[in-house]
Length: 383
Figure (tube, rainbow, N blue to C red):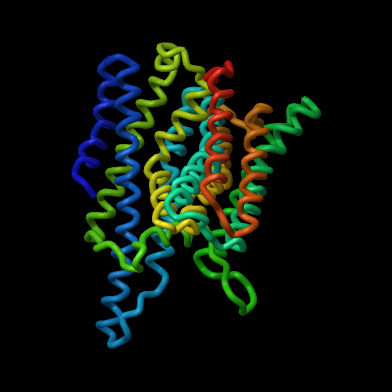
């Protein structure tokens, strides 16, 4: 990893300091946004090297015991889980800090924007560039179908409270959202059990999960692996990158109001488009490059998995956290609901035939651009 990434990540504490020293709000927002991108990249690389270090220790232990140097799947599972979980750290931090300041609308927009951005913009760019370079690309339709079903379930849990509120105008939306949040966390726990402990039932072939797709991204196209950093170094960098991202998130939330007023942008647009792109750019670029290298199966798993992760882990966690600050429900506005539903339907159709091409990718990008245009002109507030 280039040293420039580590240096650019230091813009995060600089922005945090500027926020408390009275620097111009717009400058602080830009510094925090730019710093978030390399900080997230460092965090992602640290999780990868933790997994590789674990795998290396497994190999060394087997050699010392006189066994064949064949690694188990522990390192890959740990790496896949950490990549999937820590990849959403910016959304978690921004959500918690925004809720603390009462920016409920901003938090909900960030959730919807992360789901839509990963499933439409990231996947679209991946399929477009991968198809333009490699032609028609093949992927495992059975595996993609599992992702599509889980995404549909997750997005349904985000949509139903909104439909309930629109239908009844009842004041029970909070209770419904809390129940939905708990059920989504149960699904996530079950998925971890399914993915990490291979509790898949029966004795047949095992399905691949998006956590294993995250793990597959650790390997290069020729089947080799990166040389791992020392485990302590990787853990230290992970801790530092996490702390730095917290500082940048605090600066972003503190200055998002002045930033939107200065540029005349809707806070809704910033929450649903700008913030998710900044927080997820490192993982987004990973999925795009994998598709460009003709590893579309892994790219598709990462893009869809990121959307699933936000919907089944980040969103319910923020709902439960909001009970101790400014309450947030899972009731979204009609346009957010429509775009979420359309993205899931299109992803379902793309996943059915096991093939993708640049035109399908371009259609997803255009869908995202249309939605972003509507969001740009929508009036909204941070709260």
